[in-house]
Length: 107
Image (tube, rainbow, N blue to C red; front, side):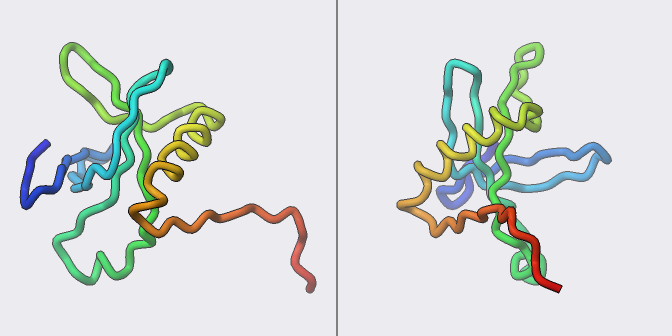
């Protein structure tokens, strides 16, 4: 992680080896593990405009002394952790919650 202009930035490699930059907005530790809420950082203004602003929430796991960021596999755990981050970040950022509707659209 690097500190640049007061931001906490991390680089993450995806499955294909592509590097992506994120700003760490928040981090929490629970009985189940450690988690971070990230926001993509773009060097290209066009990419930033096209971004949907969705948080990326990952688990921090220690692998032989190195911290790795991995997806949260358990859907219920993900929902719980996402809810915690939404509550914590709501006062600093505008967070729109998307509710799933069980109604089917009229044709």
